[in-house]
Image (cartoon, rainbow, N blue to C red; front, side):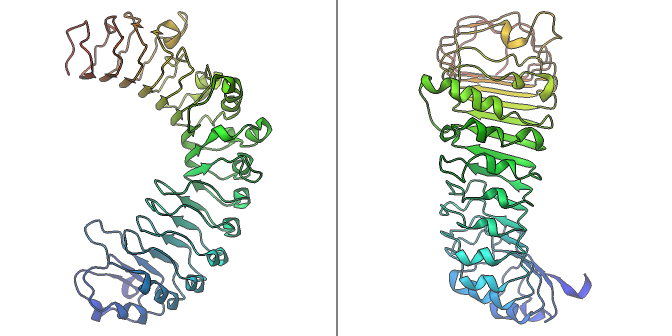
Length: 388
């Protein structure tokens, strides 16, 4: 980049050449106006953790003068509460990072920014809604909503054909908000959190999500609230239809109301799974046969009120290979009715065991734990040869 790229340290505002295209990690600039003399500026980024160049709402409209801008990061500026409509003057903008700001709404005019490819809204806690016509951003590839205040999706997300990463999708009963919108996103990958699944009752719509065709690394399926036993069968069918691709490495299922888990969870199909968390599945009275997942390293079970016994069904058939060959971390939390655990179970690679809120457990812990290094528990185990 040479003379076109500038990394600032200290107050170097007077040294910014007018033809600068890449300006990063701005610190201690007293004269803010000098930035807007760089009419050919392409990138204005701030990635430093130890310093944030503070920009408020009044300053934002001035960025519309930088019409060559391709990338703009305003991350960590807590004084930013809104964007001016003038931001649409940045017709070449491809990357916009508003993470960790106090922004409350996005201007509808942003739908005209058809060259935008990345929109980052991490930790925007005050932001409740996305653009109603977000689907008009036809070149959008990355939408990051991690830990934002967003609680629902706009209609027609399936029209964003180029979308590769979408961290969250909120289900609604209304037409245009169903899981079939995900099905049209053929390039989706990475991490996906599907929330409020309790609102999805149309099995035809669920099947059109086509998760099995998407190379996701992490998947979180959440029903969002406790449901009645009458809905258990319906939710079992929904979860069965949400079978993920065999590339999946991490899976979380929370607030699932079914009485049992689908076959795909224990099938060799998920042979690449390394982390699994099952939480608050209150209608389940037994755990799925997870012992045969060959590369599972981390397993967390939490809030299963119906579990009383963990026995052979958890490990696999007697004719199967030795269970849990790769497991290094095992956690049982708030299994309030759990009383018995198969003492003959073997966890050859287990290094850490966590037992919290399992106060009815009266049997001894499994004896074959040759790799155990650390335990955490809220009761006194019968076996006294564990380190904590």
